[in-house]
Length: 155
Image 1 (cartoon, rainbow, N blue to C red):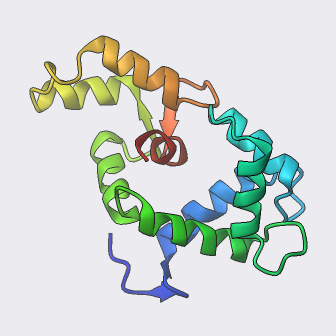
Image 2: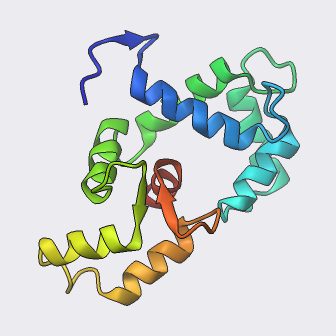
């Protein structure tokens, strides 16, 4: 993916990913992430941080210290965390697209098993491992893995 056209250090595709992730956290769609929304979204992702950890995340994200995280603050927080991540956004996107054969923005189980078979990776990714991955990564339970779910599962 070409990220030559950057907006504040964020390429268009990355910015769109951040928008989708922000909407996931912003449950009431008011443009702000509150402490409760942060906790709820993290719980949906299988993460159960303590109140202290939640406050730490809010402190990192809420740069103007008004008690909420705006989209701009969220983008800055995501970029900061990306620098500490195992993989860059570009690497994660490439990995995701390798499995998303039909390019619909989701990895279905059949796509993953097809790639595993195609690349002869069955000994590394037997069916029970793929099943476990889908159980852990498919947060919304729709039977497929979105890019956001993939990122949370891999990082």
